Length: 239
Image (cartoon, rainbow, N blue to C red):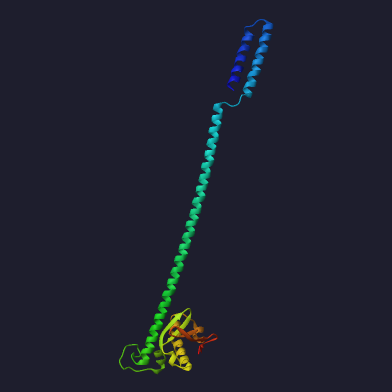
């Protein structure tokens, strides 16, 4: 490119000399032909000659800068996506932890409520046993040789009353010494006492009080009888 420009400049200078200095027409004609040839060669040289080393370096530098910008932009986008994914994952984990805590709190609350109602059933059984044995007066105060109330004799056969999975459980201490008729009387009385406590504490509604709550009777840890499905106040025994 520089050689071509130099040739063109020389030709232009020579043309000026030719015009001003050379008086002879034939010499002018000859010089003119030579100058036009050199001028043409200069244009051809300028057109054929490729970009210079400096041009190549400039182009390479521009390409490198463009590539660097593209990589930087790609890294930023990747970083943004990673940050977004990390944030989403953190939010998801937070929600899961919150859900787990809520579930755990709900389960703990349910256990506390069940434990509370079972404590009240235990207190009721203790009252009925005290009235049956004459160790409590009508107000629940301890007495010696107090009046016995035979309608509570069923309680002297019962070890525990429990509320579990919306069912009543009655544990009878001497079930193997009782007939099925005696077991039925005890189970029905225990069921009635437990139903009263459950209703007073909002565990069951009026329909359960009327129809009866499904009850399972145990001797130790063995189930020996249970309510009939469609008539919970009636009992069916295993023997």
